[in-house]
Length: 310
Image (cartoon, rainbow, N blue to C red; front, side, top):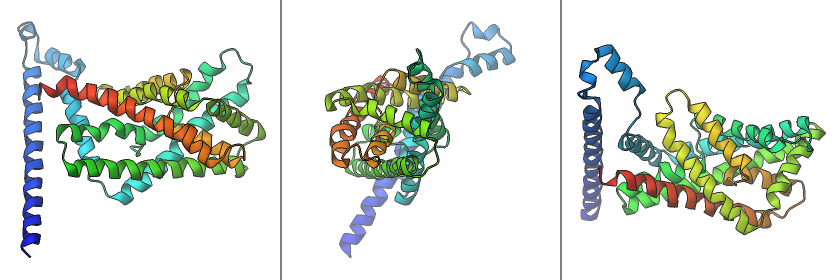
């Protein structure tokens, strides 16, 4: 009985500390925004309407962006497993739109088109626009969003929550991409030309060595993390920002673990690759590269630039 009371007391203290930290963070952000909104000597000569226009077109400070993503990450860490699971499955299905759109473009342009890669890469952006604007759980977004709360308060409970979220979301993403690959190969919903184009795209990914998939996964993880960081400042240009950087991933030949898993599963279900080879030689190296680029590089740099201001 005394142990139960002690545990409840510890939980209450932990929640009180988290609530106090949240209030303190919001107070700092409010104070920072208040200072930013205070007219400078040159702005005092402007009318109120003109000053409002300046504020509207001004950019968010790094600390404000950090605080927005930090709060999103804290909310994600508290979501129930079942919510994370179904959102992750939906994201896996949604991100497979990228491969389908690429296949449709390739089948219509032909594999000998001089600008095939640049044009085809536009199709790769479709799945990311769908997943991000629908607020679905995509693993690579969470390499920065849920990591910032851990960097701010590295407790054992938060490490556990991140591991739980990563595990649930990643497996759910793979289930979604596997289902879509199965429908693509055996569902009979695509014409023969589109299916051949999807297989050609998948073969290109499978030709990479494990070292190449790992190294190409690092920039991809960095770009996705940077994309998450930029969205609060996009101010109506969210779709353009998503399209620009996901097109860059495809056009540059970089690798993304979730979208790439759909291409690997297509080959597995078509009988051209062993499932274990697909995971060990292709999916796992990309996964490590994406985590290193998103968490190891961008998240640490993003936290470092605001640490002293906090």
